[in-house]
Image (tube, rainbow, N blue to C red):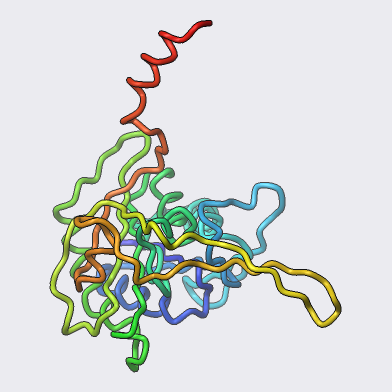
Length: 265
């Protein structure tokens, strides 16, 4: 198996080293793991692409490249440049430092990399490690992902739905903020919503007197609804959420059509 890996924390991030080990276990001794990751941290860039300027790419080692762009850029670089002669069988994005559950999904470059791979017609999985009091002080805070990641991916490859729809499925996996031995299992979940954890902005004045805004997130220990991703993670479970890039609110289509049909022209 040929696997392309990327992330949004940057080429030197420890979570990428964790993903390299996971991907190597999946690929096996006869397989190949190729890395194309951002040269600098790209957290929070979502699914953006560098459409208006070129992306510089550098070969750091065999099958290891850094690109000055977003995770989605890195996937495009992998498919159309680095691995153009033989595309990957699977794209993995992560392991993100911090969860990509609930509303974080909408901002995540890690999700953006997996989404781009799915839009390109490839199987894709995003992986993120929830951080909290149970794992931040471990020698390896990515321990849960490191020890359970390969098994979760194998189960998805063997048993998950891999369709060929226009907006094909990809998978979002979050590991709970616990030591690996305390992980309770895996749950299939919806994307949750933290009602009191919105992103915001706070102003600061620099020593030169200029005004800057710093974006900040909300509390990540805010629980989401039962059966959703962050709730499962905080209960000690690995969450697996099937996703598509289609943002249509399908539940509102019929009602909106009826209302507009009845409204005066």
